[in-house]
Length: 260
Image 1 (cartoon, rainbow, N blue to C red):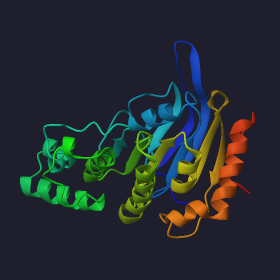
Image 2 (cartoon, one colour):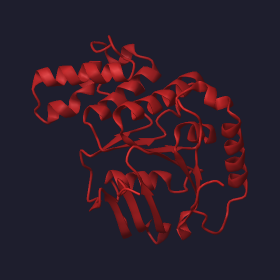
Image 3 (cartoon, rainbow, N blue to C red):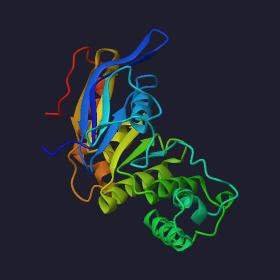
Image 4 (cartoon, rainbow, N blue to C red):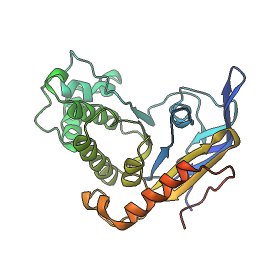
């Protein structure tokens, strides 16, 4: 197996005498979508924030391409639950913001903004302002802004949870399509079993990170993965049921392996 893009090497984290996770280990390969699934407080966002460089492990190491993560960097981009756009900037200006900060030429900023807007389905909206967009469109701008920086890894923290069901499903399909087109590695956080099964190549169900325990499920659905028909596939329905039952009766022992 190739060297992983991301590696958690016996990571521990805690604060104020409280242990959030202990001795947690996993790898994420290039181009893979790994979903962190579990209830509030199970450690999903803590893992994402350590990879983003916002938090530092109290033990072990979080690595990207074999290098210790020591803070935020351009090799990682975060898509938050709220798009957090600059209201006074156009869609194109929002998308190109990182390039502007890096002092890239204006022509390059415009070219990349146009390319990324098209990639997320917003071609022709480059001169619109955020107030003129729907919630789903604003989140697409946030996604395009991260992609414009060409990160090695995209970190998505419940990015679609505030959207209506139809828009949420459309953006799940867009996420898979964008991964296929860009090859970007994605770590995706969600509470939704359905979203996890549709989007993920692997799912880590966080059962008890205080003891380093999580359950791993491999997702095997037919290509194209972005097809809405996969939501009706018997394998989708079966895996959703298996994970649901596992969440009702979480294991107290590690089972870091794929679904058999």
